[in-house]
Image 1: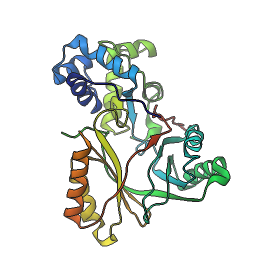
Image 2: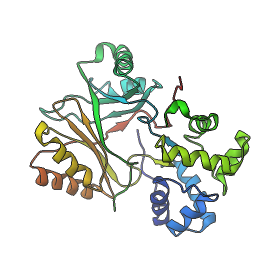
Image 3: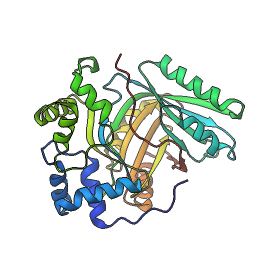
Image 4: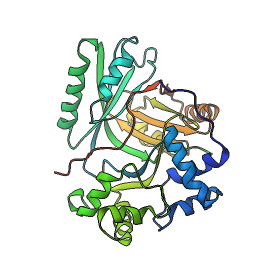
Length: 164
Length: 154
C-alpha cells in the first residue's frame, strides 16, 4: 500500500532531523530549524511543505503525551487473521477513531502467531477492554486467535528519530 | 499539572494543533491570531504544556520507512533480569520506545536507524550483550495514518 519512496536530498534529511525533535519555542522557529539544518531560511518552509504534501512528514504539530493526559493504560491488541483478509480487516479496524496505530506485521514461527496489531488507549483497563471488544466485534469470525498486551511501564519514549 | 488544570487556551492548542501547524515564518503569531490571543500567550502556554510533559514536543511526525529504517522488536526476559536488560536496551540510541508489557514476551521496543544494516547491528549487539534472542517484527503494512489523537476532557 505504500508506493516508492520519493527521493529526499541531504538538506531534506537534515531538516527532518532538526524538526522531529521539536520546534524551538521562539517567535521564528523555522529560521532556527533552518540554521540547525544549514538550509536557507526561505527554503526550510518550502521543503517542509513539500515533504508534508508527499506524506513523508505526516503532520507538524503538538504531540500530546497520552500518559500525562490521563490515558495511563495502553493495550497492544494483536490478532491472528487469514493473510488473504488482513488488508481488508486492517482497513476496517483503522476506521475506529480510538485506534492510534494499526499495522500488519509478520508472524514469527513458534513465538508469535499474530499478524494484525491495533493500539488502543484508555484511562483505565476497562476502557481499553471495551475498545478491544469493539475491534473483536468488527473482525468477527475471521479471528483465529487474539491477545492484548497491556503496558506495565514505559521505560523509554522519544519521538521516532533517525539514528546517526 | 493535571489535564483538568489545562487552561482553555491550552486545551484548544492540543485539540486544534496536533497537525496543521502553520508553515509561515511566525506560526505562533498566526495561531494566536486564529485563537484571538497574543503570540506571547501561545508561547507561554506551549512552554507550560511542554514543561509539565502534557505535550512532549511540537514538531514533525514522520512516516515510518520514509527515511531510515525501523522495526518493532521484543524479548522474553526473565523477571529477575528485567530491570537490567531493559536498561541495556533503553541505553541504545537506536531505541526510541521501550515498554514492559504483561506477557511472556515482556519487553517491547522500537529501533530506528539510518538504514537496515544499522538496525540489524543494534539487534545483534542487544542479543550479544544480554544473551537473549530478539524477536523482530518489522512493519509490513500500515492501515492507520497517525493524524493525532482525539482527547475527551471530561
